[in-house]
Image 1 (cartoon, rainbow, N blue to C red):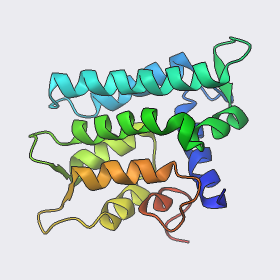
Image 2: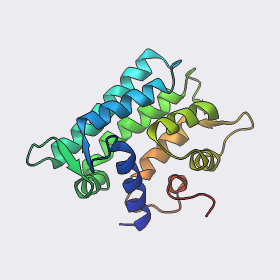
Image 3: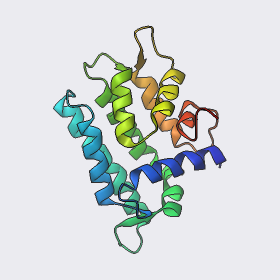
Image 4: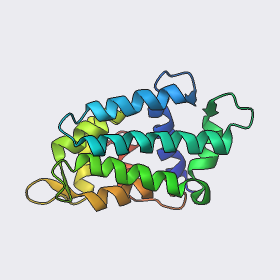
Length: 177
């Protein structure tokens, strides 16, 4: 497992731990889902519903795979064991990646505009400078758009335990460093 992968999932764990108590809980996912949906008020209702369902699947996968004591929460160590195990998490992250990128494709033309991408990634909690560097790493067109499929692939790669040097690595740390 690459240290880059651990750094990526540590960041996501911190962002998803909305209440900051050191555990992921259903309430964290509900709060995050609401923030993400509110970030794109012009999105199609179907895309919003799909995104809410994807957050639910993400949480359900974690809690069913990891919450042996049925306490309703997941620690960082438990989270890492699941999300960096493709056999345990690929289906949930694929659903999440497709839903998030679809939510950003407001007019269904297969591309995501920078302002929408920035709004969604900011709602999740990523740093603005890192978001712009990531968007640029996805190879935007002259009209400042990225392919929805490229973003979905980037999300899936983010959770790969064997990948390094991927666009998602730009989300971790200070981009000025």
